[in-house]
Length: 402
Image (cartoon, helix red, strand yellow):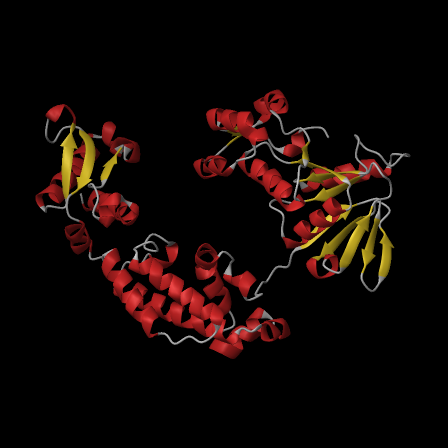
């Protein structure tokens, strides 16, 4: 029975901090228990152990069990959390509001001077005051030991921000800087891993971007027929050669000069599709493949180097098109490309007709991927979004001929 007690309590504690009950609203209700524990439908001993666990929690005043057909102890419909305090007391886990108060007190004691530190500390304090940060990964602590580790993490986070001025971060590798600040070669990586997304949600940019602390650097790959004009090094005729440019290089480009007035460039999400297209392009005597004179490889959501190149191409008046996977991420990538380009980017094969032609070869979309459809706002994807939501199948770009 203890195993079911632990699992039921864990599920309730996962849902409670983000529920209306946490802020004093209606009670937390959790259903679908037989989907969570399907063995209880067929295994008599498992069913009895599960029901005994429910009755034990109910006797402690932690939950109220709602039974189907009003037959107590037979078939559960839903569980209502009656007392969060009793739940956390029974499990020995810190109540999230008590943990947040300790974190809040600790933040208020940290001295900060740099503008970024001041902004971040103030924002975190405001969120904790309003109970808005309680569900973030950073503040999920279960015991006194985890709470102490979190306080140390916050101390080191602000030590890093106070010390990491641009000249210093550019003069040292991350692990060199980590040794200088913390006598631990991987401490900065740990700090970034725990706080990067939290800072991004709080300040609008990740900590690694704000402090220029990265272990991988953005670069863009392209095969373009025109010329890159650099500020000091003069022109570079690409002649449709496939080149990879780091951000530090593409940032020095003043403009892109097309090789022809009607130049058409296609942005591709998939690496294999990109290299296949470039190989076939080089075999064409007229330098034109399926209506395109050049290609750019995205490899997913455009990074800073990709974005810089896209802006250069858009400013040069070349005709841009985009061809991505027919799945939620692919739609979001194409949507982001259009935003970066500052105008309409044509779509290649990103339509319902193409999707239906290749749906038989699609792959199953997991719930976290399907949830991204809520962020697709481009009206050109309205029909495709609805179909993806209904079929729960995505189609990869590389199976569709260019």
